[in-house]
Structure formats: structure tokens, C-alpha cells
Length: 265
Image 1: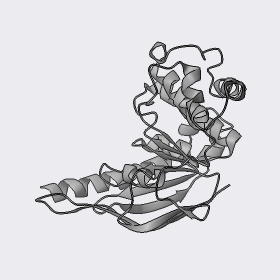
Image 2: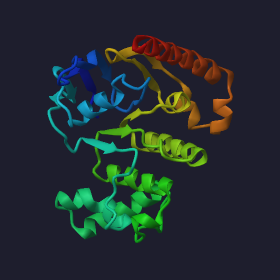
Image 3: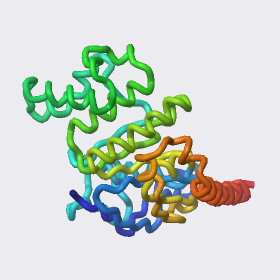
Image 4: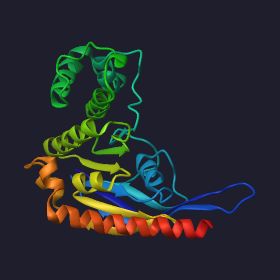
């Protein structure tokens, strides 16, 4: 398993005929393998920019990112991405979508078939392999996206608002699935969300990020993800400890939003 090391990362966007936008400034942290990190904060705080740098989609203007001692300079098979919309291939079946990555890497159908069946079972879609993507609900499509990511066996799974487009009940079920996959696979997961409750429930580590410039404002180590593997989500989210921490973070983000509004007036 590989540790992630982010050292003094900055990202500046040059905007023609305007001031440069400092999306990230001097972001540094180390993340042990097997952690579930959630990124939270108001719009413009650099959450998605940081995720795209970790994925290798963006090169930072300063600083470095290393995974297992190797510098990240481009996308690679050691990192998998799950987007808000599944970004699935509509013209392929569920099974073909999941097998796509291994197939591109030279795996034969006899090799991918049992792996796909196992992943379909893992994400709760056993028997749906021959379905077309348009036949699935939004939640089921995100399950396929998760299975497709796992099929490539990455060390790190990056998620950009993966549950943001789902209804409340489906979202809560999918939160439980993410915790289950995290426990069973032991993989490092980094998830961007706008939901304080979701960030608290899923993250055994949580960064609250602040804008102007984008930076890590608070770094929490939390017990709720481990507890969430043992108790019902509603029970956990109604507990005094969870509510107290939720209100603390909501107040922090509310203060940031107020400052942003003040700067904009």
C-alpha cells in the first residue's frame, strides 16, 4: 500500500485582463494508505482542483505530489476516478463497462468474466451484467462506476461529488456501500463533497478547506466512519457527538461564506 505525500502544492490560474486566481496555496499533508479522506468547504476553496492534481489531470504551479515515493505528473493506473455523473459508456453493457479497463490492458474475456461477476456482487448488482446503462437508475449507474474503478485495482480511489446527483434515500444507501468497499478493499479513498453530514459520516479524516486562497483550514481525525460500519446511519447521525461536530463545522463554513459575501460587496 502506498502513502500519499502532498508538499507545498499551489495552483494559480492566469485569467486574461483580470487578477490571477489562486486556487490552492501551500497545501501540504501526508495520508497513510487505507485512509478515507473527505474534502469539504465552500465553493472556490480548491477541493476539485486538488482532486484533479492528485489524479494527474492538472499539474500544480508549485509543489509536488508523491504516491508511494513516485511523483505524480500524469494520470496512472494506481489512481482511479469516480465522477458525479458516472461517465459510463452508454453503448456498452454493464459488464462491458466494468471490463473496459482490464480489456484495454490486455486481459482476455476468460480473465475478466469472473472478476466482473465478483465486482457486480460486491456493489450489489449481481445479475445486471447484461443490462444497458440507460436501463439503470442513477444509483445503480454509480454502482457500475465504482465497480469499473475497482476493476483496475488502483491504490487510490478519487471521488468528485459521486453522490451529489442522487436522491436522499439512494444517497444514504450509497454512503453505506462506500464504507463497505473501503473496509473490504483496504484502499485509500479521497472524496469531495458539499455535504457536511456526508463528509463526517464517510471520512475517518476530514479537511475543511477555505478559499481565497484555497487551503486546508482544519484537519480532523474522526471515529464516525468506523462506527458507521457497525450501526445504522440514522442512529449514528442522530448521536450527540455527531451532531456536535456537524454544528461546529457548519458554523465554520458559514463564517467562511459570510466572509466571501463581504469581500464580494
